[in-house]
Each structure stands twice: as C-alpha cells, then as structure tokens.
Length: 277
Length: 164
Image (cartoon, rainbow over all chains, first blue to last red; front, side, top):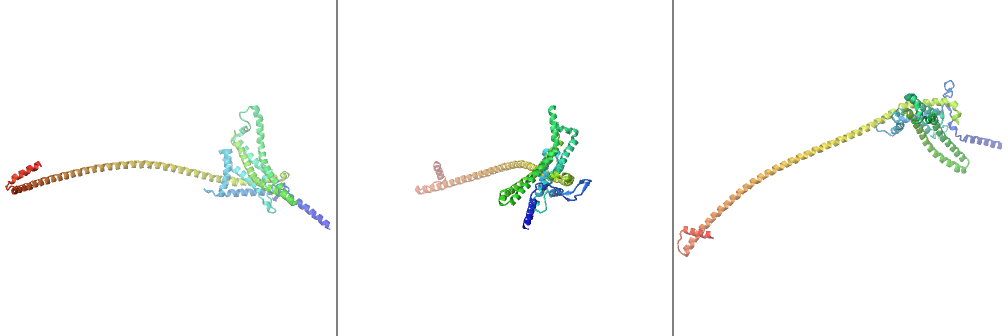
C-alpha cells in the first residue's frame, strides 16, 4: 500500500516535472482561438489563431498610438510630439534614401515599421505572469515576415517596371564595365536581387525567434536550477536569471533595430526602383 | 520548430489575418492619419519659417526706420545749430549796437560833466580873484593906508595868480 502510494507519488512527480519542463519552441505554436473550421474557400482555413489575435492587438495599439497624436495642435503635447517624431523619423529615412520622391511611400513604410516594432515589442511584454495568457510574437514566423517581405519586394518590382519598363533590367548591368566582366556581375546582381525578399524575411524571423528561444532556454535553467536545490539555485539559477534580465533589455533593442532594418532595407530597395542608376 | 511543422495547417490563416490587420493598419493609420500628422508638421514648419521671415522683415524695417530717424535727427540738429548761430549773431549785433549807444550816451554825459566842472572851476577861480582882490585892498588900506582902486587890485591879483 505504502509502496503503491510512493510509486504513484513518483509518477505524479515525474508528470509534474514533465509539465514543468520548458519547451523553448512551444511559444511559437499556433493555436486556433475561434473558428477553427472557418474557410475562405474549400481547403483554405482561416481560423482566428493566437497569432491573429496578437496581430489584431498590434493593429489596435498602433492605431491608438497614432490616433493619440491627431490633436493637430500648433504646439504639440507629449503624445503628439512622440507620434510626430515617429512619422518624422520615417520621413527623414525616406528623404535620405530615396529623396523627394520617397515621400509618397511614407504611409507604407510607417505602417510597416510600426507594425513590426509593436509586434516585436508586444512579444516581450511579460503577460505570461497572468495565468493562462501567453505572449505570441507573430514576427517570429516566416509566414508573416515572408508576406511582409513579398509586399515590399512587390512594391519595388511594380514601381520599377511601371516607371522604367524593361529598362529596369539595367539595374543588374554595371555601367562602364567591359562585357566580359559585366555579364557575370549582372548574373550575381540578379541573384542578389532575387535573394532580397528571402533575406528580408529571414533576418527578422531569425532575430526574433533566436531571442525568444534564448530567453526560454535561460528560463528553463532558472527553473531547473531552482528545483535542483539551494546550491544549484544560487550557482545556476541566479546567474541565469540575471542574464535573462540583461538579454530581455537586449531583445528590446533588437526589436527596435529589426523593425528599423526592415524599414531601412525596404526604402533602399524602393530607391533602386525609384532612382534607377 | 512549429513554424515549419505547422506551416501547411496555418499558412492560409497566417497570410489572411496578416493581410487583414496589416491592411487595416495601412488604410486607417498609414493612409488616414499619417498624411494629416505630416501635414500638421509641415504647417508648423511653414508657420515657424513665416514667423521668422516676418521677424526678420520687421527687424530690417526697424533698422531702416532708425537710419531714417537718425538722418532726420542729424538734419534737425544741424538746423537747430543754424538757428542758434543766427540768433547768437543777431543778439551779438543788437548788444553791440546797444553798447555803442550806451557808450555815446556815457561819453556825452562825461563831456557835460567835464564842462560843468570846468565852468565851476572858472567861476570858482573868478570868485577867488575877487576875494583875493578885496583882501589885497583891505590889507593895503590897513598897512599902507592907501585906498587902492578895485580895478588896480584886481589887475595886481590877476598878475600874481597868473605868475603863480
């Protein structure tokens, strides 16, 4: 009887340990919240998932943030100043990289930048402290970053061909270069051009995923160290926790930098299409 | 990696909802609000530039007005100096005329006084002669007992006085 009980307790402990184990990849799992059988057409499922929920939260927060700056006062308040500095930042970015023609892309680049920035930052908000709530970083999915990259790349292609026609292909042909050099260079240029959407999508996806995996791995060290006894708790758990705090700060920086890099590279690619050399 | 394991099951949902929410953000925020915010910024920049230009114009205007005022003031000062000089000259002329008049008047009075003094002196002299002649006749009458004619006494006195 006693042995049975202790065996049951051991199984329970094992199950608890299994449950308590941190799977660093579980945070990227997409789970349907609503309408898991919603279909756009036959076989095209459009369930409202946790990923979609965080996109919705991002969209609402971006809207709230920008709407707070719509007072249009001559002397701006703090909020208006913050929003104006963001639009001014994107405006300056396009002005510097594309020139005067870049102004018409401000709405798209601004939306892109704010959407990625808020998505990145929201994934770092510790809402996991509330039981049952899990943060989800939709920018850590290449399906999402891929769509964003394809949109940017499509704009480059559409603007390039609409503005320059087939002359747009001269983007790949280096000027003032002998043909025997220009031919291989143009091939390299073409490959590097075609790689752009992939590099754009993968850069953001990898940066966001790596940071979150690292944080979860360190969190598992904290838990394992703490449950391993006071000695390992102090030796492993505490330094891991300190490192987690530091890396969380770094991740906030990465969230901003990756959003900036995405917007910057998109504007650079648009410059190629807008101002063909 | 759920990103790859779930791709077949979730791709359409991910793409659909991203397009929905990114599209909504783009339409309402990017196209709806951002141009207005940038318009506000442009308006403010224009207003600041306009205010600065107006301030510069006002400053230039003030400088030119000050210059004009200075010129006018200098002219006024010169005119005032001229008026003062003229008045001074006029006053000097008038005072010199008055002085000359006073001088002649004084000279006249001096001359009158001198003639009066001379007359007084002459009459006094004549009286002294008469007194001296009388005294000489009395002296002669008492000492010599001779009666001298007044005319002779007078003549003798005159001779003595003339010789000093």
